[in-house]
Amino acid sequence: MKQKNILKLTAATLAIIGAGTILFYSAAEVTLAANAKKTETIPTSYQVPDNPETALPAPQAKEENSEKINYSVSMDSLNTGTPTDMDLTMEEAAQAGARYLKNIYGLDLEGAYVYMSYYPGTETFPRAFWSGDVLFQKEQTPESTRWTYMIDAVTGEMFTIDHSRQLEISVPLDYDTALEKDYHLYAELAKKKVEECKLIDSPVDRAEYNCQGYSGNDPTITVDVIGQNGEIVNMSFSRYDQMFLGLITDTSRKITESALDKIAGEVMSVDAENVENDTITWTTSVIK
Image (cartoon, rainbow, N blue to C red):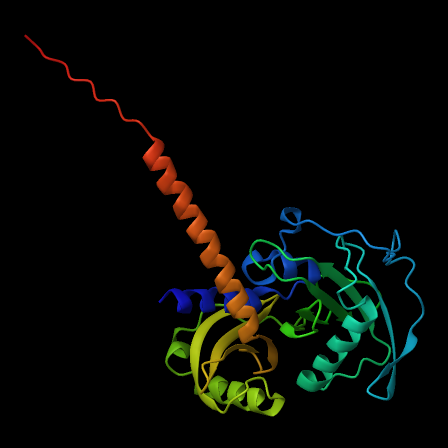
């Protein structure tokens, strides 16, 4: 039951982001570990411009798998982290992100603006990671159509990836109770996507309903695709037009679950210690 609740929480996070990088990393620290104030950074010689956004260079050709892609990469203006010598460089992380976007969305980054941020790890996600915010316009706004991803800072392994957009029409965002039992369409879409993109290292066993939410003004539904080896990938789709929106990998889920278990254990230990240290004095009065 505990594992299922964590899955629902992390999937719900993916379902409601949709308002840009700021919300993507602050909507829930469970999934994206945005509490950077609780971490320590290691100074290196890596140079970050004082105002990366205003000094954004013109798109330059980046070689990606022998293909030249014309896109620009810069540090996000809100970035506060500094990568270590062991971490991927900003450019290397952006290239890894470009490969995931190509594989999962078929996205061509020609002319795109890629804003990168580095996180050394936090209490709720104790693994250093790079995040990328990809747009086809220079200005970053909550309403911008964007693709975001979160990858391991050292290995480049994908943790999460997401696509958010602003619908041009108004659609209901209310919870659809019927989908709890009749989610077959989304289960099939999720299993197909996982198999096509090879997101699980085993044949798919089944897909189960997880939760519903919304991304900006786009209503969403999330299902868990479970492999025969026990891997679980959270897959999110739009309830409006069934577009695939994003996913949370099994690795990300395990990191989050382990961190939450540790925090819960520490809280219980502190509570137990406080109870043991408390002194209760009873006063008895005798009325004559």
